[in-house]
Image 1 (spheres, rainbow over the protein chains, first blue to last red):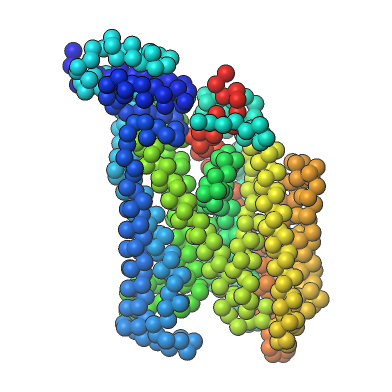
Image 2 (tube, rainbow over the protein chains, first blue to last red):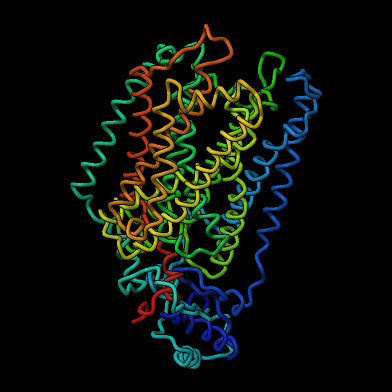
Length: 176
Length: 454
């Protein structure tokens, strides 16, 4: 039996039971591979001990890039490359450049952040996800435990911990 | 800890479980389309085909096909543009602004409202593109692309160019926001499907697996996109209003335009959402998700924005008088009592008087009354743009060039084309995409319905 491709799955059907279960299971020294849910469960990332996402920083940096690009482009085109008097205004009519700069800030921030999100989460049309349980996109929360990562505990012990934590089912799943 | 409020009504009625949510929404995608859907789709596609004759004639012959003359150089094209853009404001407002305000009732209507936004913006963008006359060259006039004139760049002092940036940013950011929300729901459909459908929705779902880490990032992305989309949605109609407000035409040269246009956009957008949702909930039997409570809340938004619009109309009149500028005063007197008095009073009746009926609880919780008034509001908002644009232009400073605007068959046909396009796209969406955001509805199910787990 190849241990590195085998998982024990705890199936939960209530988000509050799940949150307590994650705490209990981690408290018993079991390392959780990941929890799969049909909808975002608030507080799950805290009990799993995940660090805050850095996506806001990505969005900010891309936004700044958008502002700088937009301002550079407008000043270059209107002031230096082909200056023209329009409506008696200064060539470098900063207030007129605000709307386009704002729009480009939003555009780059949104696209940059979403791009980073898709790449870091490995979301792409040709991705082949490992589906632990088809009900994890319907109505069940699936807690996956990688047996290889918990070699100090035997399977019966992990099963017992899961059952005690409120799992409605405990299943096994193997991937090739 | 979840708290169930004893004061607020549940957002989802009928004691739905998580699986019921999946089933009720997915079965529309999985089942064979009904006869009613085919009838509706074919009608929309027929209008699209009919309208495309006018569109092709306009592209072939040029915009001389329209009823424009040298006095009224902007008429139905820009009226329809502003009207559609306005309608396109509700979706992002519902999903972004209401997300920031933590209004959980948005969850069952945001998907369809965002789809409506995207389709309305496509229809809106048609008009300035067609009005270019030779749209295949338009990229050089609208975008800062290097060209053989120097390069002679586009004019960044012009609000028309700001519009290019605003509308294209709004369209693409709304599309991304909508698609990110669709990914988990496509995964739900994928996991219920077999064969070809599994392959198609598998690709559409981008390999979503619902991992807690991905959900955490997803929540972060949604919140920031909402934070970006909120000023964006306000900026779009502000910039559309700059097209008029930065000019020196009496009747357009008004500092009140940005907030007044934004309120009007929300007003007409919510009305269109109601028109579409009342049909969708009936045809798809989604009465437990889009409840009378949802309709009532949207009607309240309509009263508020309708009243803001009403105050704006009165303020414009007052300022015209108070400014002491004769041309400005004449523009407004002419609006109300000149040859286009019927358009002005249609606008006043539809936009200012009719939404006040929603103060009566009986009316704002009646589906028939809401449906009728939602259409009245959109007729009124079309007249608002027509009044602002055509009545301000048709009697300019030189009385010898005063003129009236008469639409030709091509004007009407191109407008019909956009209706056909809008409804064709909406019906395709309603058949092939989950019309309700299942993941978000599930996330509010427990706190809003005691029966979710029984």
